[in-house]
Image 1 (cartoon, rainbow, N blue to C red):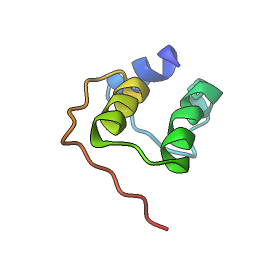
Image 2: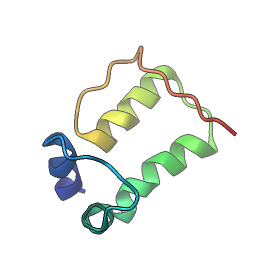
Image 3: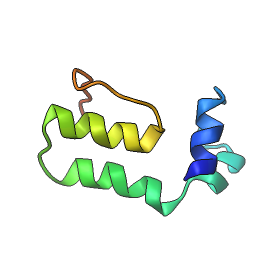
Image 4: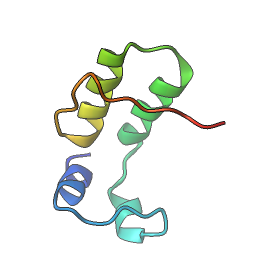
Length: 68
């Protein structure tokens, strides 16, 4: 997870077709979106989870919508 955060924080492009990125992504990183997608979370909880995922502080006004 830390290798992925370093990769991301250096401004590298994020692409699902990138083999290097695929190698850096861990199952840990997949847990957070799964948690967010399977139950209700407050704005504060969502910001906390995205901060954990990205390794950067995300403020509670942050909002994300999932398109079905």
